[in-house]
Amino acid sequence: MGKVDRHLGANHVRPATERRRWKAFVVAAAMAVSFGSPVYSDDYFKWTDENGDLHFSDSLENVPEKYRNQIQSHTFKNDQPSPPKPSSKIIPPKEPSSEGESAVKPAKRYEVPYTPHGGSEKRVIVSAVFNGSVKAPLAIDTGAPNTMISPSLAKDLGLFDEDQGRLLISVGGIAGSRPAIRSIVDAIEVGGAISRFVPVIVSPSISKSFEGLLGLDFVSNFAVTIDSKSNTVIFEELPLDPEHPGGHDQEWWAGLFQEFATSRAEWTKYREVFEDQVQNMSFSNSEDAKNIRFLIDFQITEAGKLLDKLDRYAKENAVPMSWRQY
Image (tube, rainbow, N blue to C red; front, side, top):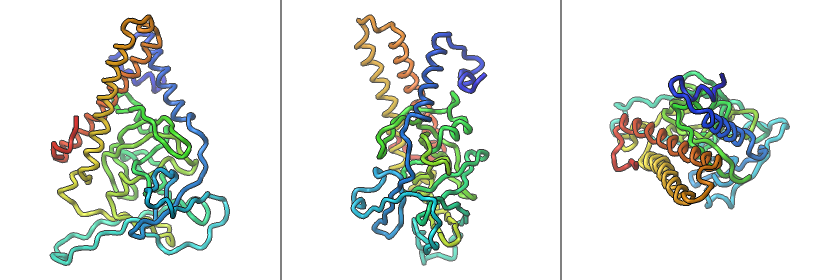
């Protein structure tokens, strides 16, 4: 029996018609995520912010407006790399306080080798371990707010299983909008540097050389320095901050709660509107109407699963109630 069928569970048997709708829905969603997007080139954008920090991104949308007049567009080529440049500092570590400095434990540092990809301007590819077991190459992208992983990696992680949140969403880029899946990974580790409870977007990979992008939701938990001479990324743990429960600020927590709660509320409202519109129409009992109801109920359920996971994690980290939206 395939993995899609196992999602139903041993004690949960759906009627034949519903099983067919479920299979058609999952297959269509998987095909949309795997094959529905256009072919992506290896073009990317490079810019420097006001602090002198260097950034890269595959999407113009990820480039802040104020920097778009100075971005540089590049294309990866198979030419020989030029001599390595001096270290490019992405996020400078905070200077230690002079007061009580001797009593402060030194921050843990993790030096991680990376594989350069491309020509003279290289993408930084590191080996990441998901949930303590599944390894995959990811490209560091400080311009991407979210970590993105490929459908094949998501499948290996079991993110398509029924007990996981797997909300269908749409993501945009230079090539236009495309379907994707919103889910959560328990932990991502890169050379000992660990970030827990990482929301991810499941979307087709932009390259065969890596399985996704390691975005700011992971990178911002560390001071990160890239040494292009030795092809090494240095992750330095940031000091614990009571204003950042679980390593995240109020904006991160409130934004995720709002995202999942709003999605559930909007799909619930849409179900009411849909039923009002088709109540007195012959369409109301058609197979198409049943499929639409199934999709709506699926989205409501999956948004609720993600919200429940986030709420449990918030309680574990004593996140203030004012940061949570249900």
